[in-house]
Image (spheres, one colour):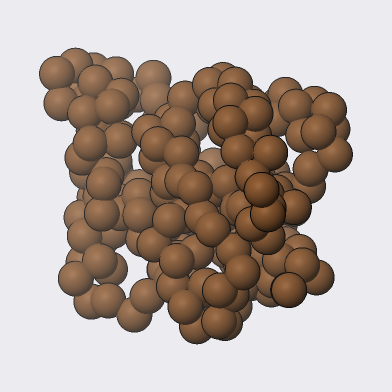
Length: 201
């Protein structure tokens, strides 16, 4: 059986952006396999899910790349990837490769108590944050989860007035100051492209 070229195992929260980057850059040699976006809120499950996907597909592909940062796994994802000799996106969080390392570090230094939103998290805020953390049922948990936060930064990938309005609304709901930084897809495109273009057939 002839192996296919490149499999990118991606966080479902990045699916829309990675599909768009594939289209814009003509990366026809890659296949994208997205894991459930809900794992974004359950980082302890990410390493096992990535391992299972690698084991399912590795016989079919010449190369595999993982489009996750560490994403709160505390190094557990890297341990899995080291076993298979597979690389991932650089950084501790997806926010870092959306904004760029220097910009993200400047934001963190300016206000450590920052809660970040991307386009995906802005769209699915109610499901992943409000409902996912139980704030809709137990509003008294707001202080427990967000008492140490001071600011919400919306890192936008698209230029959407509707999403920016929603992000402002989410900041108000959480009682946080609001800041908007437009990142586009340049940084994540460079980060991903550095890996997948070397495998162009």
